[in-house]
Length: 101
Image (tube, rainbow, N blue to C red; front, side, top):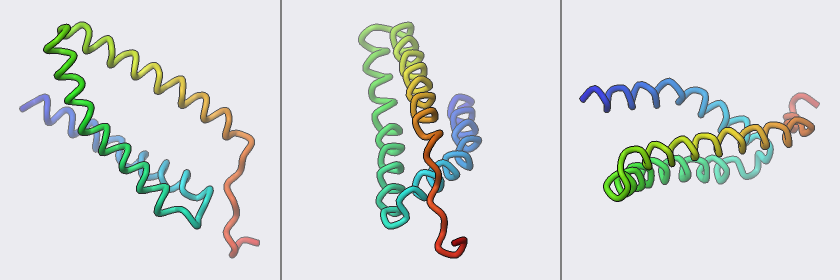
């Protein structure tokens, strides 16, 4: 359907940026890189599973307006948390590779 295609195109547009973020975050602790990336991918998969379930529950229980309202609140919360993390990480720098020393 058109909705599924639009959803998949949107996900594909952000996939390269998500990969770059995972690589950047995992560089803070190279010895735990695989563990860090696996936790981030686990969160992504959990959201892909829980999101439609929660949306369907909200829509069938309280209607479309409530479901969209919760979606907006989650988006705002995500943006606020992103700004908080960005500001808290401004002073930290990524560790250098052994080669660059």
